Length: 168
Ligand SMILES: [Zn+2]
Image 1 (spheres, rainbow, N blue to C red):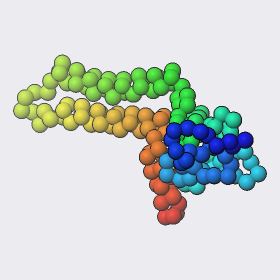
Image 2 (cartoon, protein in one colour):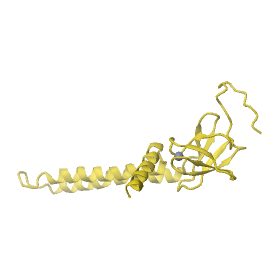
Image 3 (cartoon, helix red, strand yellow):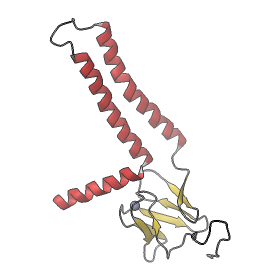
Image 4 (cartoon, helix red, strand yellow):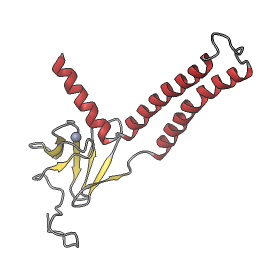
């Protein structure tokens, strides 16, 4: 077990074991350390639970909707089979359709039946198109960061939850 690795990256590298702490691969903010009497790690900040496979030098997050695995290379985490490719494709397809279609439809209809020039509601289609675009765009942006569990987004969510708890 735990034989020192001989490689060109210097003495900084160390293997994955239950005695050390590592930066959390989910939020990249907290540190994960072993839970007493369990073959698992927990993050000090986002509180995610990971099961470890020391032989493969990998950990898997257990309490997330995304079954994500990371490989420890001695210095940092590398995402392994990060997300299901089919699901990623569907998320992107739906995202692009949601952002592009509604504004296009509104624009098309306002183009086909334009409001009369000089009428009081002449500005309305333009505002409506941009409103449709930005509202759908923010929804899709949220969908994507949630799908990919962007570390900065996860850390922000934890901070928000704590702030809300403190106020409650
Ligand atoms: Zn974390």
